[in-house]
Image (cartoon, rainbow, N blue to C red):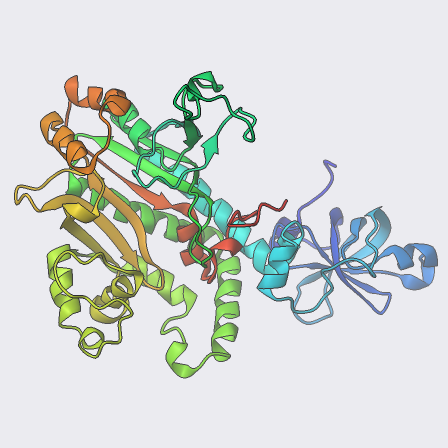
Length: 478
């Protein structure tokens, strides 16, 4: 195995007349002579030239699309178009056969819907190879960004007894026989007899636990799976997705906005640098897709332009109140073109409103702040006006909200008052309130949905295509 060279490294080197061993999967085999071999390190194949007259016919028959090969040969300058080098095969070994009658990924165009049904094999296509290499780079860049700034990576629990958002859309975790759980005298399920001695669920957010870490370590971040039992069959929702949630002690809403903007620019820049080829391929794919659409539905910018646009512009910062005024007076609102008309202050902004602000009005990414407290979570710091909270959302072109965060309410009396107003039981969150009892300080944080970020950077239209094995209603395959 140690002799093997990855195809990406081989194609980047200019050396010829050397012997190498490459291993990968057959994309195509033409004229019994030319094998296009790919090992997933790049979308580019290396061409293997076979001396078919001196190769065993039984071996040639086994070289089919999808088969795994080990090839040793000499690197020579290519005579064909589109590649600099070929490998003249000296030795070919079939490591794994692939029945061409049954292999579902024949060399032709496949729909994304079909590929979702064979998600275990879709990594082998150019589109998904590119997507998951970009996802890998974004993941690494997130860790690098926070590590370089002295943040501590904190693992928050996947099983928890709290519903951080108060939304109630959680997956329950139990050890009971669900057909016949033990019950109390009043007939309710007796969770005291369950594995954890209480009702538990899969986490919807690591934020509340993250705050506990920040109250001792100053700056922490989480990066892990979160779960929502939301019956949404849309291109924007998943039941299992990954979240990045930093929490920073001694930070206010402005610090929060600065870190979030810096993070987004850093990771986009990193992906453009490390995965230029993959992003160019995805950009090209998007342009081809766009040509099939009516003129008014086509993208104004290519994928590469859109990413560069986010790097080149300072994000526009404005309050929710200013945004409502802009939206109320906007042409689509006056002409009743919005699906959800903007009536006035207090309206919960929809994706169409967010995209209008970014794509049409400001023509740059936008950070909205100071939302009405009624439409935001209990833990957000109340502003002096008594009506708004120190919340911030970052809105991106084509996607709407990509980051949501706030300065957290550090004043115990204000936090308890808000919990009472909304009906969140204080006794269940005694541990959270302790951080306000013992050495409270101003602090802030935000959540970045990782798949939303990958969606944006790859230009894909469906969130199910940017996570290896999507989980959504009625689907937990693979």
